[in-house]
Each structure stands twice: as C-alpha cells, then as structure tokens.
Length: 459
Image (spheres, rainbow, N blue to C red):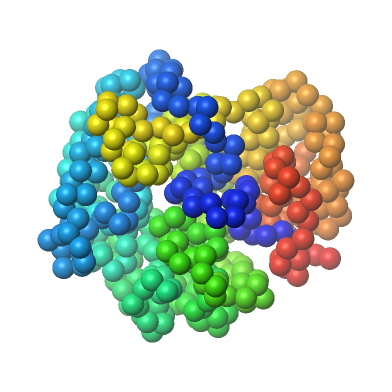
C-alpha cells in the first residue's frame, strides 16, 4: 500500500545531506539557522536542572577513521584525525560543564565506522571522565563497524570498552569501490564478525544492507539477503541507496546509471519484505527488521518503545546529546544540529564556540503530530481520548483532512479505526511508516496512498 522506506520528506534536488538527514527519524527539513548555540546552552541548563538520564552520540567521519600507520590507509591522516579528536574532546568539555558532572548515560552510539583502537580508548576515557558509564551493560551502547576494517580481535577490544550492540555494514561495491560482486556475495567475513560478536557477548547484532544500486539485480539481492538470514543476525536495517545513510552514499550517487531501474528497485523491496517476514523478522519501522525476541520487539510488545535522534530505543526518558560533525542534540522540544563542514567545525571550537549551525523548536501543533506519530509507530495503536485530553482538541476535527484516507485504510484491512482508537493491523505493519506520515503536514507526504507494496496488502 505504502512505500516501506518512505521518509518524512524529500531533499531538494542537488542538496548534499548532512548525516542526520537520513539517520534521524524526525527528519531535518524544518531546521533553520534561527536556532543556534544560545538556544542549545539554555537547553543544556534546563537538562542540568531536570537531571534526566542521557543518550549520547559521537560521530567520527568515515574519511578520518584510519590512522596513517594502518596498512589500510591510502593517505596520511594523522593530523586530521588527531585534530578532530582534540576538537571533539573540547566540545565534550564545553557541553559537559553545562550539563553538570556525573550524568548517567543509558544510551550511547558511536557512528561513522571502526575507529583505530587507540583513538577509541582515548575517546571512551574522555567520555567517562565527564559522564557516568558505570552501568553500561544495563544500557544500550552501540557502535558501527566497517566490515573490512574490523577483525575478531578488534571486536573483543570494542566489547572491552563497554559496547553492547554492534552494527555491521555490508560492503558497497558501487562505482567508488574496488570490491567484486563475488566479495559482495561472500558471507564469510560477516559470518566471522557475527561469531566474534556472539563470543564476546554483544547483546544484539545488526546488519546494514542497501538495495537499488546499478550493480545489483533482484536475483543478486535475494541471494545476498538469504545468506544474511542464514547467519541469524538479531536485526537488519535495510535502506534504499537513493536515500542512504550518509556513510553509504557514493561520491558519484548522482551520476547517470548509479541506481537500478525503478522496476528492479520495487522488486527488491518486495523480496526484502517477503524473505524477512517469512524468516520470522518483525518490521519495526524506518527500515528496521528485528527478531521476535530482540530488545526492540519486546519493548514494542510491552508498550515501552520510543524514538529519538538515533531511531528506535528503549530509553525514551533521556535527553539526547550529539558530538561531532552533523550531530543532533534533542532536549525536550528543542533540536539543534552541528555543522557538517569540517573546517567550520574546527574553527568554531577553536574560537570557544559550540559548532551549531541550525535547529528547530517544536511548537504545539508540531508536538501534536509528533506525539501521534511516535505512539502509532512505537505502540502500533493510538488512544484518541488521551490525545484529546492532553492537547485540548477534537481529534477528528484536527485531522479532518486525512480522515477519509484513514477510513480507506480501514476498508482495506490495514488499520482499525473508531472514534476512540486507531490500531495498525498485521496487514498494515509493513506500511507503518507511510501510515504515520499521513499525520505529517509536509505537502510531499500528503495523499501518498499508493506504492509498490499495493500487491502485498489486501485489495
């Protein structure tokens, strides 16, 4: 019925996205330069008073992840990575002094690929000096690793630093890579890292898998997905290369022939849904499939699933703070984002300023829609009287423009709809993103009632 991987909005043609444009479930199209570092400082002081637990994220740009002493590095980047880490440490200090000492961290994510272990140790040491990581095994501490820059021993060293979740990227063999299709189809390296993760006691293992590049065919994608399912990862995050997370975007993504035909792309989406659901994976949303016993599936079943700037989480009561290029911070209804320009990032910190470039403050009307969307996406149901009581509105009048579309979904067996309740039925689970997007006011989402998934839903 709907596009499974539909996001909260398209980017203008020619726009080069910041990392959060694709990784952040709230979208960033409302962000503007009118929100800046002073707003962030006020938000940090509010957080200091409330003493809510924290969700932290640190971004290491993939192009800086290797030291020159590594045989994998093609150019010397010692100065760049050292300089970046110094500024990152300074940024943590600036923000930490406003948050207050000893704040408890329940969720932590290190993004951008596998760092050199000496850099990882230094980074984690600096973080632990400022924040309370003492009970990391009870939290969710995740790291993204690069398949070809990580081995068995590295996985053990990463686990020693307190990480409990690992995300492994399947290699992109597009126009910027020397890898062969045979390497793409070879499950042995991924199998090795999964074995290592299980041996060292990681609580969950996620696989990132993209589809839609010109070098892929429906058959090659189906074979690849089948080999990954046999490895039994806890989670798979499947994304369209046309809307890929920043670290997977090809430098020539806009070149002619970079993507496969729309017909092949639609077929890959259908294959993805059929194979993963057939193997017992549940679709949570935002391209994330999980096993039935995964933490996220269990949290959803018990009504404890939430969404923040890192996606779905069990820790909905946290203030989220991001460090590094393009990082997003969310404190209550305030969102701010760092610059994605490395030179500007360094210059602002060298001047003693926070590297904020834009942001957004969620107003009441936005909060209504955000609350409805989060509850539907996380709980798969919505208590309409509770929303009316909280915001002082009549739900059907407030969403009058989309009510006929909701009734159409009910007639197709995708949702349950009454004056007091909305529930997403099993037949509508794969369409949860687009159903939620009906409540978003963006014109590009309005009326989006058809997609390649029509044939997967009742007529």
